[in-house]
Image (cartoon, rainbow, N blue to C red; front, side, top):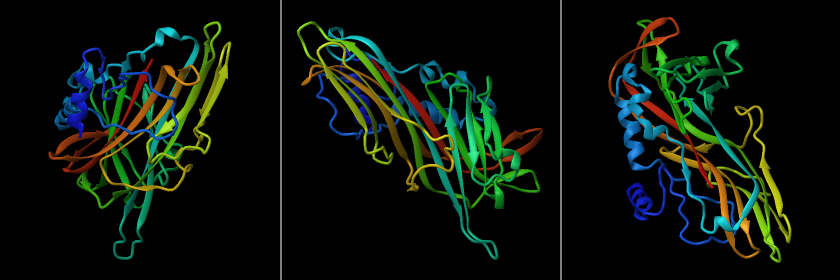
Length: 340
């Protein structure tokens, strides 16, 4: 499926598809009638780049190793007839924050354990939070700046040995940002060994904002449509759009506000079955009452996939040296894309 999509993106010479997602529109589309969209995985070329990067020794994981194309902004060409619409205001913003629920089975007299970790990506840093941190000082989460040189190791301890090692790569100001989460236990020999903590479920909190205003040609009627769209595992409010029809300057806005406490807010968890890809999109559609002439949109996509660490590596945890042993990890990526 990925290969077919990749070929389709490059089949049309007039389309700029410099990213993981192709936004080409061969003809003016109708106005959106459903809040559902399909979240597309990272394309074949960028996926290959990411995998090769993760296979490198941690000390060799530099931004140079990722390459310029991986961090290039994703902006696609205007929709057909965009020149017919004199847009005075077009603001579209979108964001998605995943919370991952992990479980560990009962052992002897120890009860089963459930713990949640959230990952909030920013341009300069990523915020990692745990529902059961071992230390009270970490209750508000850890704000980790993306390193300037090589991948950084963050040991986030949870109660009842429900801990994760996060590998934070140098992806500052990148349109594709990611971390690697490895369930591990810390042994007395200063090694991080694969634990029995496993991913059980995922839930998302999202935000979307779409504000628009345009000038209608004299003697005509204009329509503007603002919406928040999402893939099936993301729950939207019952009211997902707003519109306005006018002979002068149609204007409208739509907004989904993300709760301040992302870790404990939200609906129930969706059972995790990796790989998973989900997206939220803020969208503006401009045109006549019957035809869309211009689309402006912003999409944020989260992708979760398994990764097997197949080599033992030395790492640094705060001021101590440790050994990261082989085992399973999860790659959590977030990418932003814009279409004007």
